[in-house]
Image (tube, rainbow, N blue to C red; front, side, top):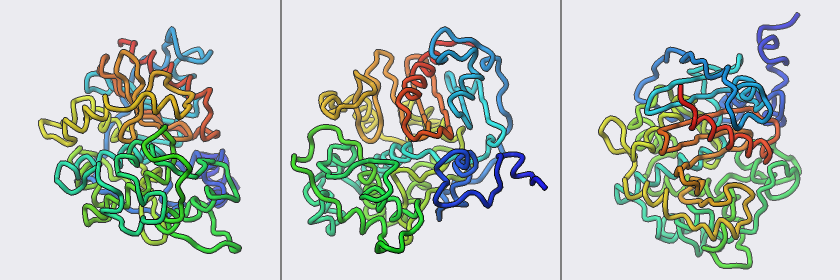
Length: 393
């Protein structure tokens, strides 16, 4: 007898395991229910509010002139791009939404590396309170980092992914350092033949590469997990509480968020946050409004200006990125380098928060894209977002 769960997802709940939760088709469920798969901590909103909607629009039937990758209309493109949740805001108002049958307005969705960008916003608030200096050595807050690659770098090196690190960001690795990393965060099953590690103990084993810190952009998720630990040291709070008090509650988020944690409760600040699409859009709208929400400052203006303008383009080029040829990376956020001033946060498996100040547009796209990277689809999404920014209802 087929269960209601199997009718919704095409498989039984018992088929979803720690070994397969990031693979299709199981990701259609687990990306919206990460707390059922990996131990997690709550990032509290002031109070949860059941939201109404979704907002109806004729956008889904539109055949935009650009950016649909051969699809006949926006709705078809969203399906083609494995979209679970989509929100389009213009001038502070939601004008179009789309949710897959297995998703919904009040359902959290893991955002993977968009977590990095949210983590950095908490550091901005801590700097404003005099609790963290981005230009200080990591060892000021984490003395035990001496002897690791982080022993002689600054927090700014970590924020900008310019740490000299002998590490390969190999998402599909099953037997090397990345597999150890996944096990330490409890994202993969334990390996009985290998010793157990926590996130912090793993980070402290990472070694420096042959070149100095502060050079080419080198994307490495462990850097962002280290930022989560630094947040705890600077604030005296667990990561989830610090995010709640310095970002989520001030933002006016309508739903609690969550973050996966390891055996010691250390948060996966690099990729473990789950939020609703609308709450993520509220983050983008806050940044579009210069770090303000309802007349209250959430992110210091100086931090935001620095984040949007101070990234080193040459470091980006030297990092040999195949995306954003005019781009920059600063404080865990991507700058497109285009004349429209667009900036974004990106996560594997098709997670996006895209902001175009020139057209007052904020776009959220949460997905269960089977390939964690899929460079072709990443470029399709960028073209799609630019077409949406140019669209007027």
